[in-house]
Image (cartoon, rainbow, N blue to C red; front, side, top):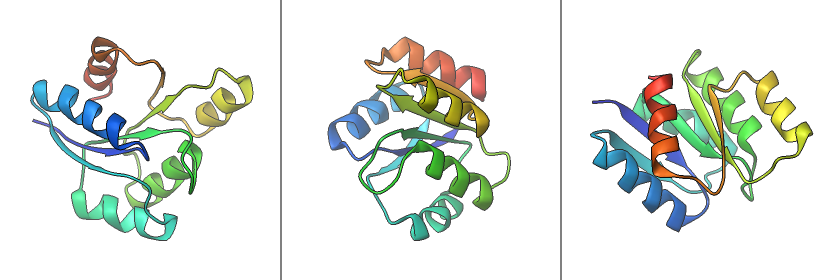
Length: 119
């Protein structure tokens, strides 16, 4: 069983992702926006196998999350969820070498296939 951290400012989305992932046998810890200064420590405390994050949140975006997570735990896979098809957003995520980019609206099988591929 893998441990996955889900970061999303939407409680609905956190609950939905948690349900999908737990039904596939993963342990899930989730939270909404936390200050970027606390993000790395929170990830370190959880010692996850994977982080799944929304791209656009009030305090920061998926690029910042990826940078902070990778500084805390180098090489930790990060999957980013986005509603954007903006080439600049996609390029920024690719430059950060995120493990996978999933576009919303999200389908459970697409999410689970990405998680299996990353892990």
